[in-house]
Every structure is written in C-alpha cells, then in structure tokens.
Length: 241
Image 1: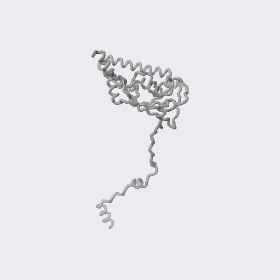
Image 2: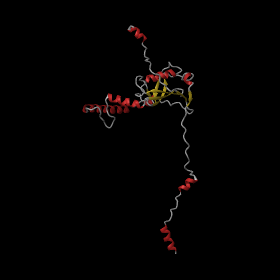
Image 3: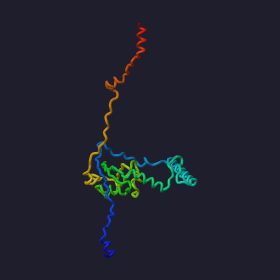
Image 4: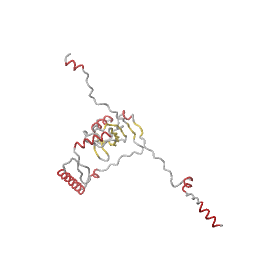
C-alpha cells in the first residue's frame, strides 16, 4: 500500500476546541431596579493642579525605579515599602499559580433593559471570546456594544485573558451600546429570553427587640443571694444570746 493511500485511510484528529458548559442563567430585573444615574463627562476630568500633582508623583516614582535598577543586581527589590520589582518570568509563574486557584470565572452582565445574563468561562479564555458569546445571545447580534466594569473601566483589549483583565473569579459587567437608540423588544434573543427566571434576593433574618426582655432573662439577670458560711452563722447566733 502506498504512502498516499495510507494517509488517506488514516483517521483525521479532531482539532476543534472542546465545548465548555457556560451554565447560562438569565434573570429578570428586580422590582426595585433603577436606571443608573448618568454622570457628565466633566465629572471625570481633572483640573490643572491635579494633573500636575499626578505627573510629578509619577516622574518621581519612575526615577526611583531607575535608580534602584542601577544599584541593585538582584531580581527582587523593594522601593518605599511598595510592591517588589519582579522579572517577567517571576510574574508569569505567579500568574499561573493564581490561575490554578481560579480556573473558572463567572460573569454577570447587566443589559440596557436591566436584564441580567450570567455565564461561566475559563479564566484563561480571552476577552474576545466573551464578546463573541454575548453577541450571539443578543436579538441584534450585529449591533456594536461595549463591556464596562463599574464605574467606567472599558474592556477594549480582546487579546488578554479574563484573569489578566481582573475578572476572575467573578465580576459584574455592564453592556452599553456604542450607538445610542432604543430597539423595540427585548435585548436578548427569544432563545435566551425563554430561560428567564426571577432574581432571588437574600432575605434578612428578623432582629429581636432587645428593649423588651423576657421574664426568664429578667429573672436570670438578677443576682442570687450568696449563702452565709456556717462559722458566720454560729457567731451571729452567739452574739444574739
């Protein structure tokens, strides 16, 4: 048998990535849910004094790092009780150890209509995978959107892992449309809207009223009379005689 025939008969390995159970859950908004207050962009702008102060502090810190790098020959050094300087290999090993502790990441996304979509990912998956999954759940998958960590941290780099983006082991995100405008109907597709369920809120246990003590507590709180020693009783009786 020729090599060409053998290669044609040989089974082809399945190189498709394994499917991951996303454990998708869809929650209806709570009854007391309110739209987030819109803060103007000027609220986040810094004035001249604040910018100059931050710039001076950053320049001074960078100069300290450069001076320490010149004087120090080891891979680990502390500066002003801050985090130690580490080599890239040390940071990679440290990141791998932390990812072993948090292999899964649970993401809960708040949609513009206040519906909550929850799914599970592997911490080593990229942010781009998160965007692709969320796009597939929308009723308008072609509409551009952005994911944000409250209050205004934008997830714009699709190449970093969920762990490196600071999302592990669990995070709450907000989905915002890049082009404003309301769309009739629900944000999610009918397939995912069929999975909707109420969001259970933890109930607080009733607190007992401490101002009204019971009879048992009031009686137990009163000090009991101490018994009189025998020798003292004899002395008292002799004095009476």
